[in-house]
Image (cartoon, rainbow, N blue to C red; front, side):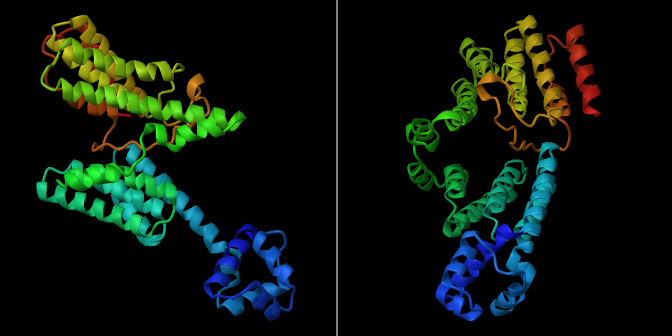
Length: 365
């Protein structure tokens, strides 16, 4: 508990606009003693703690930071509950939990950032256009409020990076472009800068983080290029090639098969490839991709034990992202829903039936 005393003491002293010398006179100690209290080099005698607390009009527990410890533990519990619900697909429950957490911890800007993200995500899955608009406007208002009051640069950068898309969603392209222009490009990012100044273990850690982050960005860009550049060109060689390249990015990085949350993206890519090959009447490749989609769906539903990646290029990086999906069931069930229509040319094959049986079995778990 003592590690919080120095922070709390210094914060209260400054809030009351008192100098170290003034407090030294009050408590009949040297200014150097007060200075050591604030640096953590030393602490007041235990008999003096009630007097200090009384002088500031707080309890000894508050002075020692016991409340801060309890808050940290409580926040940790809430985060665990939110992530658990998100990974299960319980988006509405996660939003409700995060709203409650923000009311409980109104100065926790990380929690507010998460709320903005989840509210935006919930809006994307609303069938009612008016509700969708309300969610988007709420997420935007939360984000703008964070930027107005939060001084944590990491949180501000995170919020700022999401604002352009939020503005676009409400139809304000002028603000979307203006906000995007404020963000650094790839070569100006802190992740690149750190690789130029770090050495030894810090450098290795940063490089692995970059591989993890930039491979995801590359995969996403290839996937989106396939979807939008060739949106109405199903089964075209170009679309298929881009989707296969997107899958290969993750295959190259996660050589141990430790995809973690990336299983979700792999499931999506292989499902679309299966659709394209089916349209092209390429039965063999369609079945291959459908089997891979099923593998990744089932693996996603069972990836919970993976905490740290083991593959060489990303070894030691955490698998600590959040999976957000509008479904209230497993990814196996999600894939079953997706393939319930279509695949007429292969649905009578034994391999297709095997995929369905596997998914049905795992969707129940």
